[in-house]
Length: 125
Image (cartoon, rainbow, N blue to C red; front, side):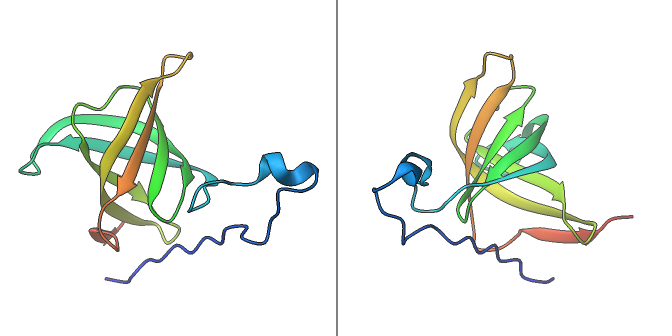
């Protein structure tokens, strides 16, 4: 299994002067907008599935993801499954940081990625 590392540089040279000050990422790890379909499975403390949800990863950072999903999560732990750029099915676990209903009726979910690499990667058949 190959190791996947996502490196995102933050704008550490930015100053608060000028008109770009309002657009500067103030988080420790910058978010990068993406659009990746994802399967989210809520799991219990013994990693048993509780509920299945489909969504889109809207942004990613070195430590977490922002997801828009049709339904709310039913636990604070998730297994996130997606297809990577090499057409492999990849899984990683996450801890739910927040979940709130948007005005459009979908749910915005923030998840902290657990571990230092993907839990599993399988060739897509």
